[in-house]
Image 1 (spheres, rainbow, N blue to C red):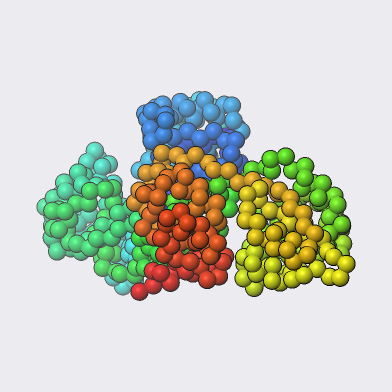
Image 2 (image 1 turned 180 degrees about the vertical axis):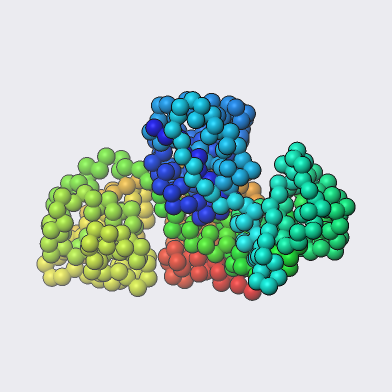
Length: 483
């Protein structure tokens, strides 16, 4: 039984250490500060208890002593307890006090360092704290801590190099006054990095005198002196930086789209409008069809979910024997490939109409096709196959249900720039949950079927992917935002 004091980093969840991620994935309980990104909490198992100690959830805020007592209690009953702290647990944080309380109580603990904002925020703003032949040192000060501790301001001003301050509107002005009094010029260059490493990061260039007048109104990393002269911006130059995008896919499927958007600089808000559920009969019809799979000439799967559930229902993949398999779209074909099965047919266009044309008419003497799909889906495919002369059976592989949106999701939706829809059900459920007035200014759809549903519901479709895949949808968004 061990309590792990893990540094969560400054904001970007990608800066969590490998060790930190490993422990989160094994955690029985996670104690965290409110600013910690929800992506990090999602790494922990669903069974893990999650406790917010800052009062940003339903629990009231806890004092430092309360948190220490809580860690001791949890550490006595759980195998792995993760105390997830912003930045590093031992740098401008309460980790030292918490570790002392655990030691005194005889509870085992370990410290997993994290990336601190004082280093990460300047790097994300393109500021090199040390520069060859220009400056070989930097000093880090917490403006809040400095007001409680003796500081030799003359020595700091005399040292030169780069000074990194952590503070906000109330704590910065007194520090600037002391630095000026110690001899630092009012023309000294300054860069304020607000919400560093986050998708809404902001960078403001100024001088020491200007900073005294206009201290940032949110907690910031202030770079003063030589390091602030560099301008190697990269983070804020990514093509979707500053764009807030809503992803409506189910939580299990959102990762591929969300990760691509984040890599391109977007702030992603996951608002799942569908969740995948068992078929209404518990899967009895699917398993019966899988038992008789050899009776069919073709198996048709229309989505990755349908492909995975159908393959999972097969007792032995060899039962497919001479049965050919068709998949609508490369994502569905990839889901088959996960079971070492290569689709015999993937139509040129990833819609039912294209598959109909590719399958054509049955051979002389007739043919049988099993269509494995969601409970609610368009009947274009089975009706078209039957009209062409095929003997068609349709089996329900899964159902999509609509999760109830949270208050947090509703608030995050309010200032979003783009909403992405990857199926007709995501559009329908979104409008049902939020109404058309809540739709962000730009609507992006994965293909013509989804776009048609959006238009039928009164939405204006601004982006329609020409290639009906997640990659195609991302490319279409890039084309929209290209200068």
